[in-house]
Length: 209
Image (cartoon, rainbow, N blue to C red; front, top):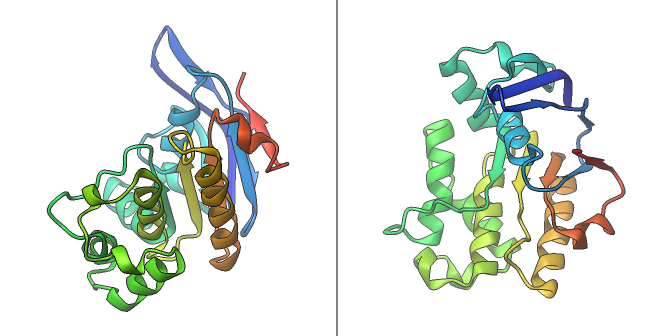
């Protein structure tokens, strides 16, 4: 599902990264750990196609995304990659349901309202769907981000520090949900984190030194 080879990236001469080779199959979980400044978020942005590597290949379901044009990469990302970022970037004036539906419309040109409602119900957010994101707790907002990332049934699910702002109870709930949903949707799940609580939960790990 996901495979990388000889990926390097640099912002300038002082900030250069050479990343280990990654592999993550459908329904599997890969945890990427490392201290601040080791390139965790940079790697996640490379896997998402938000940055392009200086060298190497990033393949998602046998498509080398590094070789795609910007337009084709945007289309590929919308249909195949689900992103859960630290900052949720909701549209503040739109309801929870509208924010999730918008992700389907941007990727496919269709509003998957029924699918969005089903996902929100599965994430125990059915009673929150008509509220504004600002009216939800941080834990609830994180679950809305998961629903939005899953709406297009991506092949690859990328989560950047999904539990860092949550207490223990909600952190483990979110981790369990991500693992359960990645299996249900047969998506490869890559979690980038420095949250030590997750290191004991997932055995498949790569540490960026």
